[in-house]
Every structure is written in C-alpha cells, then in structure tokens.
Image (tube, rainbow, N blue to C red; front, side):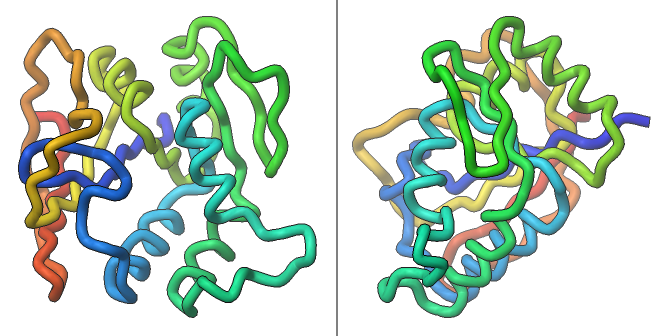
Length: 186
C-alpha cells in the first residue's frame, strides 16, 4: 500500500494562492495547519515553497523562537521543524533543515517516495502540486478558502490541461470566515 500524497493550501475566492492574499493567520487556523502537518511524516516542496517555509518556520540557531511568534505559531513550528523534507529543484545545489534534494524526473521520484513506509506526504506550493495532480499522484486535496478576492498572484493548480474530478469528503468553517474543503479524486 502506498502512503497518501496530500495537497493542502490557502486559496482566495478568486483562486489566488499568494501566501499573503487571504485572512491573516489566527489561533484557529494555525491549530488546523498544525494538525494537518501531524497527519504526515514527510513534507514535499518545490524550491520556492521550501525557501519560504524555511525562512518563516525553521528554528533559529539560538534555539529560541522569535518574539513575533505567538503560541499557535510556535506549536506549528515545533511540528514542522523536525519533519523530513523532500525538495524538488533543478536550481538548488544543496538543502538542509532535515531535507533531501530531488533532481531530474520528479514524477518518478514522487512515485518512489509514495512507496516508502510512512503516514503520508504533505505537499505544498503552487507549481509542483499542479504537475503531480496532472499525473494523478495527489490522493487528497484540502483547500482553505478565504473570503477574499485577490487581484494578483499565482492561481490554484494553474496549468492542468485535463479535468480532474473530485469528490467532497469533508468541510468545515473557521470562525473568521474561511471554509475548509477536503476532496479526494472521484
């Protein structure tokens, strides 16, 4: 049995996935994202998302979390920081932060990764998920839909040529107005 590849991302009503376009994170949303991380033991990112996440959530060399982090952000960081990370990139020469670099045929690399034992692989980002979804490798899609319309930024799963039919398997709301929608391929 293969471990599931789960894609989860914040998205606005207009389909924008720019990381600053939705509602600001709050305790409820951070608890949700922390629980999402706990469902997997491996994170899979492309270069851009890896560098973004590392800059925000890696434990500083001092060992102390920055003052700007509240308790919910520290909890998220403490789950993410030690997790295994796999980074697909043709431009990076090396990675650290419990990470390994994947070069070449990312689709084949992800197929092999899914065959490894584990609770699951959490997929993040914009471009890499579109490639993997187009190949039928994503087992679950979770969209946190924010009640905002962004006029800029990349679009959710942009570039997929063939229709991917999904079945809604779970939904819930955040008090701030965002809606969680979880889908599996139909």
